[in-house]
Amino acid sequence: MTDRYANSRRLFERAKLCIAAGVNSGIRKMEQPVPLYFQRGDGPRVWDVDGNEYIDFQIGQGALLYGHAPAGMADAIAAQAKLGTHWAAQCELEIEVAERLQKLIPSAERVRFSNSATEVVLSALRLARAHTGKPLIVKFEGAYHGWADEGLVGFAPPPDKWGDAENPTRLHPSQGVIPGVLDTFVVVRWNDPAHLRRQVQKHSGQIAAILFEPIPCNTCCLEPVPGMIETIRELCDREGMLMIADETITGFRFAPGGAQESLGFVPDLTIFGKAIGGGVPFAALAGKVSAMQKIIEGTVIHAGTLNGNPLCLAASKWCLDHVLSLGDQHPSVVTALGQRLMAGLRSLADQHGVPMRPQGPGPAFHAVMLKSGAAEGPVTDYRDYVQRHDGPRWLHLRRCLLDHGVRAIERGLWFVSLAHRSSDIDEALQKAEPALAQHAREWLHLEAAKSTNS
Image 1: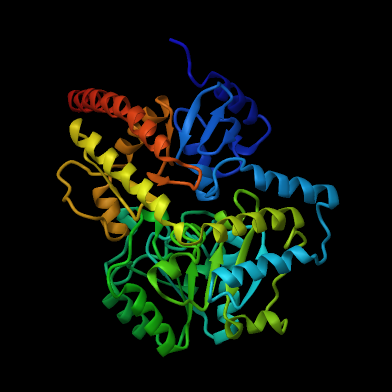
Image 2: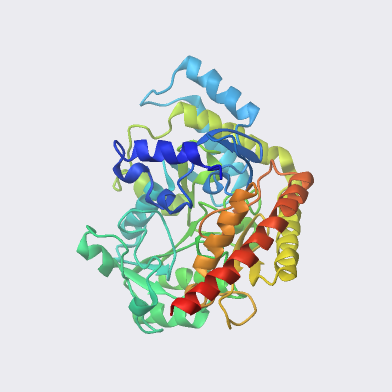
């Protein structure tokens, strides 16, 4: 049988001789059957080095809200490259991008630019501690806020390390972390306002900020229950804490003004990444003047040689102009497409007896794969997700989808971009039907073999 991924396998073996572990981001090593290598992308489609074509719902881990290689963005970057690629100084583009952010995001009274959302998270937490004079940060169990020491506290702990329900673990998944970092966090359960209230009361007077994804897309697209966001805002106001919204994924995707617009709240600080640059290394910290004051006066250091890089600014200006041009059309089109894709996948899964239950708003959603005997209904928090989602079974289905030309993210997340059209959704569902049939057959045999061996 011909190996569909032969060239990717060959390049990966070559890469392991010169690149640590063969990849430049640890999560990429998860891809099965091999980390794929790509040659080009166009709109909602991408082609690997073996010539395989995919309808792409991974879409640059969400960065490519505008699809692959949009012509206008490429032209904007090329035009700037001819003028200069780096100044380590100011240019008018940075003002133009900042002004567009102010227009889109009411809470963005002032902004600062960086090269990744991980950097912005670190800046936001430093600023919060300086602003309040308090040491602790509240974050939510299982949440991902970049790969640095602070962003991964409490990220994806295994069930035997959860701790009790009232005091979730601050376990860090990486070795080499500064030990004292763990002691600066309070980990709280998402979608449990009463638990949040108790933990804030327990640490009253010591908390600088509450850090959260408005819709935790990195953990199963857990839409907030009624009162969750309101409780965060209320407690921050009462305790003098900063409300920090991590809109790395939700920014510009769920509304032109991000999830804060669609959910109707105003944070003190916001973290933007991914879609703000459309695939270039660009991110921003935005916030109220009062919250940004320590940076304005220079008592909190925020620096970086490549901050405000003109190539990235040119790309971001194009991206933000594109969002602005959509007006009231956004996000209704991508929401409708995403919801139709979710419904179609659920229908196909039901036909083949596959317990897949897509959940999420539509522009992003998660393919929950229920374990045998797991309860029906929306997943609401991290522990619920781990207890009910069958990760190995999803990975098998994901591989089947890949073999049939549909690409989603290894952890179950799907993104719909502004480049996807109704015909792409139709084609994706046509391709998903034999993939689900293949998965159903093969999984039955795998389970039977497992039972025989045990």
